[in-house]
Length: 199
Image 1 (cartoon, rainbow, N blue to C red):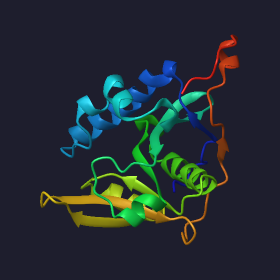
Image 2: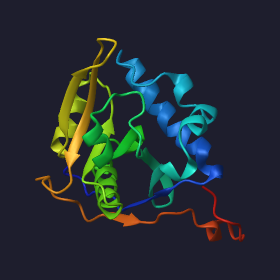
Image 3: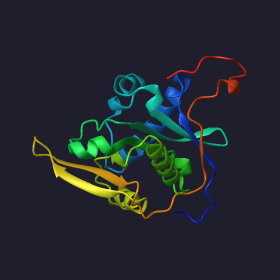
Image 4: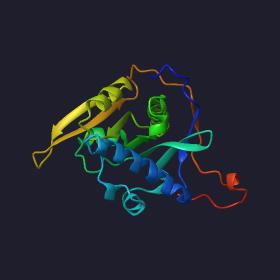
């Protein structure tokens, strides 16, 4: 955790009008990893069309500081392309595409997003939070371990090494931060216009 004061973060599911902001956060992260020679996602996987083909709107979450979107993640009960043991799959809320805007990197926001997801998973009755991230970046893997994740490596049916990260909600030794607010839906009153909730 950074020594700087951690900003207050509001996390909620996105609306359809926020999908492009969600994609922009993912694209920025993908560009940054690509520039370091460590591609994390293929760009065609994080377009609005591709995301909607794989995830529902109410599975996509953004974190906001003072109303500005600064972080993103997907939460659902599917492991995506990673083969996961049946017992882990049943017990897990899966986190995908955890991202923090580069301007806010190092301020503790990734930890706040994980903590929010931990609370959300517990409320939903899951015993594990599993992050689907087949990354090779040593710094990122170390950071995830500091959040309480255990790294799981396995070889799939195609003899490819796969990696994901698993956090035991009941036995995690890493304390939760108090700075996240639960706001599950988009508030249309912000637009000064009454509209039905989407997603």
